[in-house]
Image (cartoon, rainbow, N blue to C red; front, side):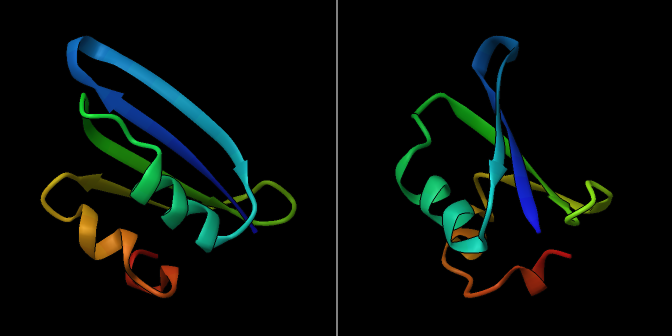
Length: 76
C-alpha cells in the first residue's frame, strides 16, 4: 500500500506529496507538516501495483478525526 496527499491551500495553491508508505506516515504528516494556509487535503490510497483503492476529501472540520485515527478503515 501507499498513499498520496494533495494539499489545497488559499489562493488555489496546491502541493502533492507522493509515496507515503504507511498510515502512520499519513497521520504524522497531517499532525505536524500542514501549514496555516491549508484548506483541505485529498488522501489517495493505492495498492502495491498502483491501482487506486480509494480516496477521501478531508476538511479542517474533520481533520482531527482522521489524523488521530489508528487505521485508515474509517476512510476507505
